[in-house]
Image (cartoon, rainbow over all chains, first blue to last red):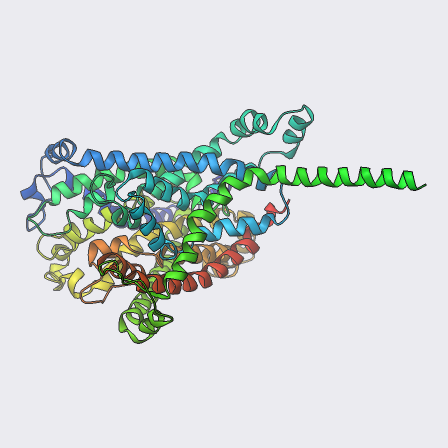
Length: 282
Length: 310
């Protein structure tokens, strides 16, 4: 941002070109944002308005569909999503923070190899472990169990969590840890008293990134759950079949289901790049 | 003499055991995460390889029989996998290529002197944040639907009013929705690259009489190239796994026109319950992904992790 501030031409340059590029930019952004805007608009329509030809552009907004969705069978799905996302994020922090600490502050031999191993598991396709995990869950009667899904989501996010937390830990001046150790701080004191407060923003960013990845997860959700533990994306499957036209209701459900991640992503914009590139780009 | 040497030796071993203890203490915090990852990813993968040599269908009783390489042989002879591999490659390459080009364009716009950059970026990343299943359904039912969709209505004046996009051009529809989703991702990464650029260099080039296009090609593009590579490689690791939008938009169809490897796996494992066959597909998918991932991670390490060697 500061680079752009320097670049801002004090003499003004060509204001017309600035206006043209601004217009082009806004047009492009509008095109990309439009489906989201349209989803919001559809959600505030009545069903006949949403399924009209030509499409209804001007209408009096109604909360009818939102009311129906929130008082119907949607809330349990939403709650399941919240349990799986928050639960797995918590587990990622508990397991990932010590690991990240070991990799960043007190590197062991072959640190690079361990890091490589962690991150390679993030990109192991779900095809690799899907069938055995499914059979295990079935034999343990853990299919359609939200805690089993939470454990799977922990696996998906743990490599990412370790990498991100490590990249935040690397930014803490080394001397701080040395000082604490000289003062005789134990490992846990070091973690709780020094590490956690110092990388609190990093922990928040990591949590948001983990939430984004798990909240939207669909493959495991649709195959490992059916009714009791089904999450928000699975709820939307019910709208695929053409049992009548429920476009407004679909839009309202899609809006609500997308809201937590949209807000999290907008709040954590700066950390988003860092998270998406596994800490490589700051 | 000997006693001194012995004493030295004793001191040596305690020092060594102390060092070993120290090394284990350092490793200890790593272990819970390490063990967890091994338990949930590596052991199941070993089982996947094992199952892939068996003829095993959950819908048939007592069907667990050693089959050698029969599952792999079937993959080679059966057309389904060839189609799925082709669809996966086609989908991945087109989505990545188009979204890199669009992402570069949008990032350049957002890095130039325009009004409301921050707000533009905020709106721009929304497609990436929207739940993919939700986004795909919104596209299918409210934008592309030939009867009530907005797009056919807007395109009616140029004679494309009654095009049933999802059924007539299924792959184009899937690619379009995925490009919509991945362009913001590319844009974010490339924009980070553009913003790391020293504006004085560009200024100097301009003073030396370089045109905007020359400056872009000679100075900006080489600078953002590693960011483009990173975006393309990471993006392809995600796009290879595309499942949500295919499930929602086309369900792999019509026929097998949009069935990629993840969707084929879903069909074989959870519609056919053919565990042996699904495992063989899993092994093939892992080999394919490993090739991309190795290149991707090497590139990332060499370009971005210089600062981490400490």
